[in-house]
Length: 363
Ligand SMILES: [Zn+2]
Ligand SMILES: [Zn+2]
Image 1: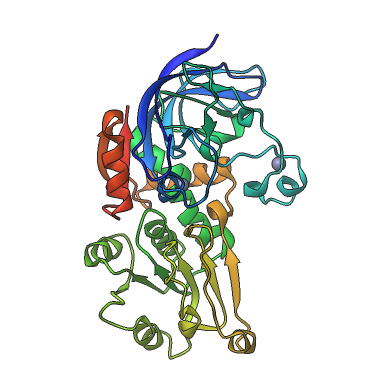
Image 2 (image 1 turned 45 degrees about the vertical axis):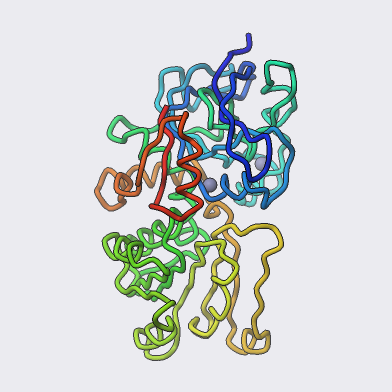
């Protein structure tokens, strides 16, 4: 039995989403159907909607969600109907080449949720599900590995942030770069990902955490959540401050948490010999940056990409919930504004304009 539901669909890149009633089918053996309560707007949704990554249309985006489990297939044991759960685009079979190597974000299993015709317009036309989730809608069907139970202590709004912005920023520090106590960290871009790089570096007891952003308001927020120093590069060269803080050696690790093309240019000037650049903010297709190769080799530096914070969804969300409950991880203050589904385009415009940490659609 298919279910009729309201969904905000993308029919044309760069155009506002359109709310339509569409059909969603039933969860299969290893799948979970969630009644969506909240869904954050991520920069990846905006990039997709604006056509930065291509893809077929019509498409249903939204991948940072929380809700209540409506029904489950017979192979699902991690949640049951009635449970409160967070929903992520991260999915893993647990047994493929990459899952065995703990690179869950690269899982190569062909998930049945990606099959066409599982979402249909009233006229029978298939709707694609961007990023394997499709949560700008009243219901979503996802693989069981994409849901994690959340406690009563956490609001749905805060819980929805966990599965993309929080886990990505946090995981890039804890998993990808494995930052340890006493290190000097720089975070470029204080958005939904960067603010969680900062929180993770604070929790990991970094010696200094320097936040770089062109918005003074965002830098103030960064200082509230753990940045020990802030720099607005439109007024000051970040290298001067980083050198001052590190006996002129440079930072141990620099996290680029924005997809802005200029963000990585010149970054190696303030990374110490043996230090790392971690690229975590997603840019549009075709974005490049250049650096002086001989200096990079001479300084034994490295570059790492961090997709979704190299996270293991269930283990890392459990740790984030523990940190939230202990007071170490701030989530509630990351929610800037909430919008009803009818006003989703306002929420998308606010995110595109860089307003706030996270704008969240509430059903
Ligand atoms: Zn995202
Ligand atoms: Zn796999």
